[in-house]
Length: 260
Image (cartoon, rainbow, N blue to C red; front, side):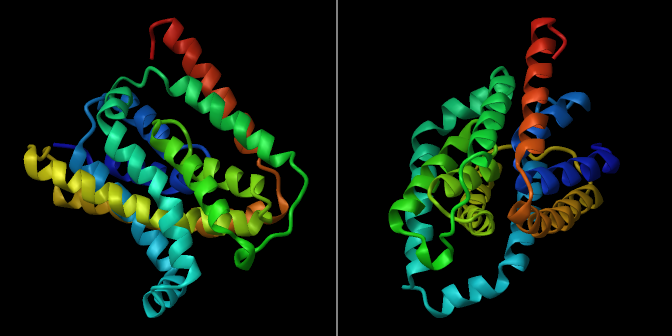
C-alpha cells in the first residue's frame, strides 16, 4: 500500500513546483525516484494535478465567472489561441514524450534550458503592457512556449512567464496570464489521463492517501500561485534560474556516474 506520507510529500511538491518556475513534472520524477516509485501511479498523478487545478479555480474564481458570463470576450479568444499549441503538441507527440518522461534521461538538460530561459527573460528591459494590451499574437507566442513544457523538466510556468516578458508584458501581468493560461491545459491533461485510467489498472493507494495528496497539492498550489504573482512584480527570477541550473548539472553528473 502506498504510504500516506509519501502522497503528502508528492502533493506538496506538485503544489509548489507547478507554479514556481522550476518544473513540477521534473520534481515529481525526482521525488518518485527517491521513493523507489519509478513506475508512477497514474491515479495519484491525476489527482495531484486535480489539486493544482482546484487551486487555480479558487484563485481565478472571479475571472472565471466573468468568462462564463461573457464567453465571447477577448480573454476567451486569448485563452483559446494560447492553448492550441499545447493541444496540438499533446495530440501529436504524447506517446513520444510519455516515453521520455518514464526514463528521465533528458531531465538534466531540460532543467538547464529552463534556467537559461528564466535568466534571459529576467535581464530583459522592463515592459509596461498589462492585461488589456495582450494581443492574439502575444497569446500564441506564449502558447508555443507552453507547448514546450510537454518535456518533463521544462517548467510550464517558467516558460510562459518568460514568454510573457519577451512579449512586452509587465512582470505581474505576465505571471497572471501565465497561470490563467495553464487552467485549460491542466484540465485537458486530467481528462487525458482520466481516459487512460479507464483502460488500465488502478494502483494500490488508500483513499486517505489520495485525499491527503490532493489536498496538499491544492493548498500549496494556492499558496504558490498567489505568492508568485506578488513576488515576480518586484523581484528577480535569477534565484529560480540558478536553482534549476544547479539541479540540472547535479542530475547530469549523477547520471554520468550511473547513480540517477
